Amino acid sequence: MSDDRNVLGGALEECGTDPVTGFYRDGCCTTGPQDAGSHTVCAVMTGEFLQHQREIGNDLATAQPRFGFPGLKPGDRWCVVASRWLQSYEAGVAAPVVLAATHARALDVVPLEALQEYAVDVPADPSSLL
Image 1 (cartoon, rainbow, N blue to C red):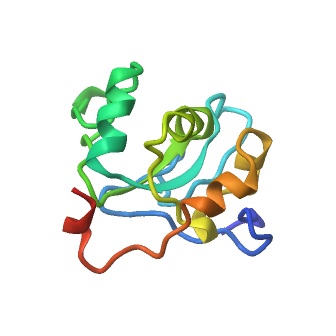
Image 2: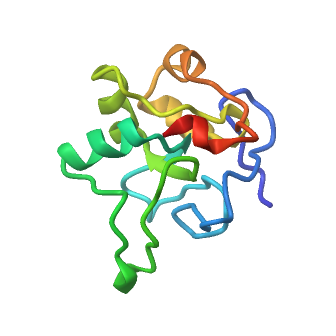
Image 3: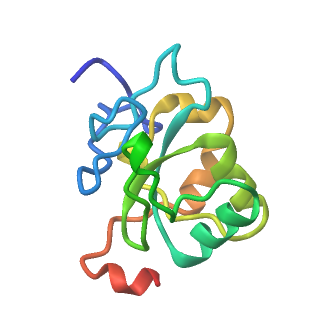
């Protein structure tokens, strides 16, 4: 892995590999000049978050095979666009965040306090996220 840092200042940890996430589909919320959307927040999907994202025009639940996108379900970990996560946060339906896997560049858009408010360890039983 490169020298990418997380929002806590440590080495960026893997976000998810089932499905494989990240702008570069490397399992991490790494970012670069090609990532105009800043896919930097490692979020654990919930039904409420997925519904809100669909309502604001960002359907993360429907598979898009032509883009290699499997569609997400509650419990999946995914690198979401920082501004999209912030929209859900402001609406009171933010998804839980894995801070160690959230890229420091997310702080360009989202205050650390907001991310910390939704910080979680990934639950062993993702059914609690339904």
